[in-house]
Length: 267
Image (cartoon, rainbow, N blue to C red; front, side, top):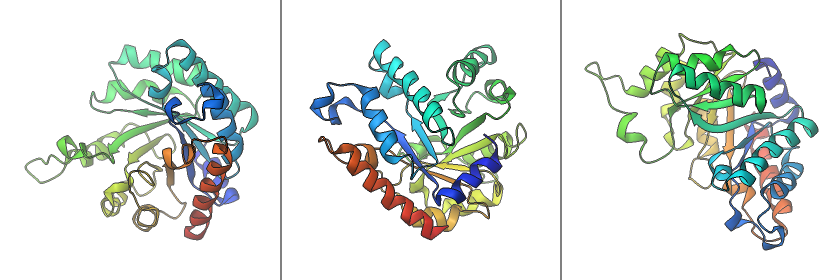
């Protein structure tokens, strides 16, 4: 999917919502018997009209072993077949030496056929460039995250006072343009979006942390939106596990619709 196609879908749906599929069996209704794919399918069908992206988080599937990975595969295939306009992000946070990264790239972009993959940049250029060899596929680099521990490394400054996350933004731009690379910036970072937009004015930002983690959608839009929106805002638990009863899909649709309506006003 190209940057223009993504932008046009945002305009069409009046939404920049990504529904995070962090599917937790402990929060699913007992009637599903722990069937991750059945849960995801219901959530996808209920929320696809309000979302421009889905983001299955691989950790929630790997923990279930083979059956969990099968549910991950089936989820991606279901979205691809039934909602071809939806942008699929595999939240796997890969990043390793070049040979290993090439295998990861083949796994996610060839075998699974997702549109984008989250990447940890700590190991540098040769850990990221193998993912950039696929036309129409995206690398989403962790830049400034929403968790409390982001302060441990991401804000460490050099002698000129430049924090590490700014070095990540500046350096990675040398490897790909705004048509192939996005950045993760947590919603809880608030006014830091203003500084980030000075460095990367044209890139899409994947923004977790709205909802359960306390980030403000209005603040994200105020400081992070550019002339072509430039935002993909993720909500996971706040939508998919808003109810643990048999009405979970209906409640998820209501939560997604409410966010879409907020986004339409902000657009």
